[in-house]
Amino acid sequence: MEIYERLGNELKRRKLRITSQREAVLSIFIENKGEHLTADEVYEKLSHKNSHISKATIYRSVELLREMNFLSKINFGDGLERYEVRDAHTHQHHHLICNECGKVYEIEEDLLDDLEKLIGKRTGFKIVDHQLNFYGVCPRCQNHHKEEIEKVEVQQVRK
Amino acid sequence: MEIYERLGNELKRRKLRITSQREAVLSIFIENKGEHLTADEVYEKLSHKNSHISKATIYRSVELLREMNFLSKINFGDGLERYEVRDAHTHQHHHLICNECGKVYEIEEDLLDDLEKLIGKRTGFKIVDHQLNFYGVCPRCQNHHKEEIEKVEVQQVRK
DNA sequence: CTCGCTGCAAAGCCTTTGCATTCGC
DNA sequence: GCGAATGCAAAGGCTTTGCAGCGAG
Image (cartoon, rainbow over all chains, first blue to last red; front, side):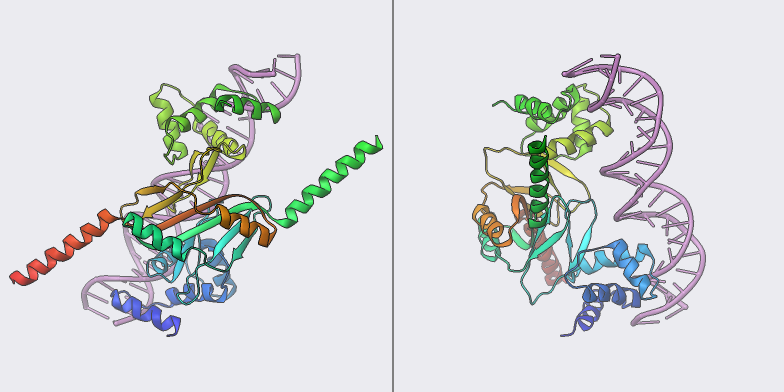
């Protein structure tokens, strides 16, 4: 089923209204699949499309879309709340965050399905979602370090 | 090695100063192992010990302690930055968060050591940390749901 | 004695809220 | 037309920052 149709159905089911703003906010996430957008970034992207929706409405919409499972909330520890489309048909994916440059890489496969089931069984939790972040230093930043060390060594040799 | 000694050494190594405030902040985490404290909670716990340290200093200290790997920063999606002691000798643990009551449970074992190594090898990242959160409904809240449903059914039968 | 650290208050930023107006149904 | 949703501006809450004074080395 098409996603905007699903949105309409879900809103009806909850006796909420189908508004252009709600559809527009969802459209930004669909057009930017794979990005982890903050409310402010959604606002900017909408502005560029000459669609002026107030920030208050964006905050209200992303939270609603999350409750209806169209979006996932993610957090990379930078103090901002981010959201991304949640596609029921694809696997969950995870994030690899570089502590130095802040860049976020994605790991496409979901390696935690079995783990999730196991933990659910063992704890009695009805688990509906998980979020896994790895933190480290990406290859690029590792190379920069090496270069700096080499520079220092060269300078010491020159002394 | 004792942890305050490690703190002193690490501060010296970085040519920073050993202050009573830094030790006091770390002490709160040691005395509250297993809790996930916000800056404000640290402030409150210090006040109860008649140790009045300004919030600014607490924010600066927890961030420094994190950089030095004495603390881990964790985020449960409630808009607050939390920290907990990071014990090099014990395994990492994960969090199980109830979407209804907000309670956080801990899963003691670390199931991701191998996964971390695998991903490091495959991506070239030098991974130093990971954070895994599961979200769902805890057994207690599931029971409340059942009771509510039963209530409704009983009322319907009575009609 | 020097320079880093702290405390205080103010500023900054992201997010939420109150309320009048608009608009879906 | 009714009640929900939006927009605006203001408020709220957590965190950071500037700067004077203090204190570790």
